Length: 545
Ligand SMILES: [Zn+2]
Image (cartoon, rainbow, N blue to C red; front, side, top):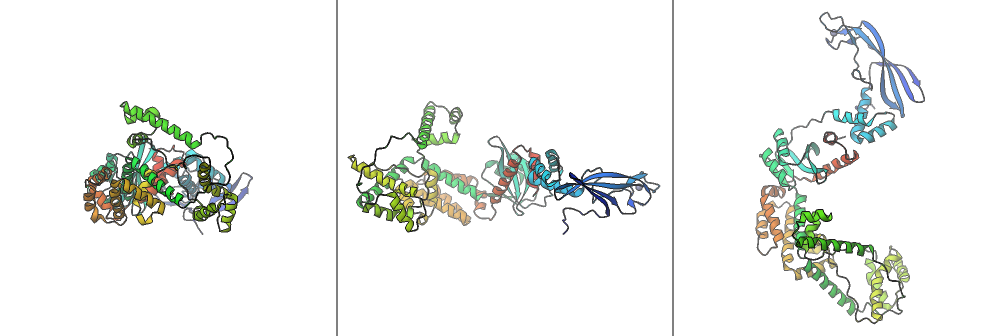
């Protein structure tokens, strides 16, 4: 089958093939009896002379291929023509003065767009088309940008050229799912200028950044702006996280309530029995990595609070201690040292807990034995996971024997604000028993959170099911004095960007595909080791590859 990318040179004849270890040379000549003058276009058959042209061609089984092409010169017999002698043109084969065939050029351009300079040069060399990285980059720069047809709906998003310092803007055609332009900077003016050059755009989807909303209003006042649903959800989640961070004390108390209830239940059911033999003596252990890190965080927290009390600004504290400004803000807002919650992993012993408790109560404290029994029931975890599971019971039991007054209550770790925000956004029926008990305890301790949670869930439902007609009522409800300040602020934010939010909750347009396109842009940027200048990056992003 003929590849449409690679035009087949017609009107050529192969005279001889010479195969050397390093290259294949093909002696080629033209067959046409006459040629057209490039100036006047008149056909001429009167040959003046001929010469050999050397051209690189597509490789043959990884071998470099060279053409030795015999080209003729003709007389132009047209009396009015300014050209007396001309060389025959072979547009299908190669352009004048080219050192490579047209089909080799196309193949190299494809490689350049797919792999960039260094990577492309490496690949092309291995395939038998040696070329330098700079030449490939020159090809990318020289390629004409794809012609964009009329645009109706575009999505806008920003991306970092250098994180925290320089940013760019990516624009995508939402209907054809392809990038249409890459701009330098993310200012309102940049977007407005671009939009003025592309009249006829009716829909603009964007995130909630004010610069894009201003730019879109100035550059395309006729267009409907649609806020991104993902970012709306993100904003809601952030509001809940702030709300929970301000109530860290109540969260801890709720966790303690839950732990106390659980301990009472355990004692009542007599699960933990005194052990049969005392634990053997162990050497005191050194601090664990977790404890070392906690100590370091605590020290940093104390420094932040001290500087804050001295009246130092958050920005300066962050700079002086070399930490993130967000972290400084979080420490100051928290009111006390925010403990980090260890991540929970699903345990393979989970489904067998009841059986383990029963066997423990019967007096079987041997982890090896227990693991064997569980395996017979289909348990697929390791012996170590069983040992970890019973270690806590063993520990509590041995303390009972050593004559201490009472078992030490287990450490109280409330879930992190981020995880808790996720729990609040779930329908109560979707929560597992443990989470539901904790959320109920939190609601008891903090009725404000109990008021906020259904309201937040309602907004999420509205967002998922595109119920924009309920937005006004929702904002009114959120402005009620009984609702915590964080959610009221979120509602005020919605009101300030009302039209775009309403469109997000009503229309099908979404900025989601921009996330994928930004990801592709970042991949290309990193493929070029982050050293690509904007023009090069733009070319590669716009060409589909
Ligand atoms: Zn002529």
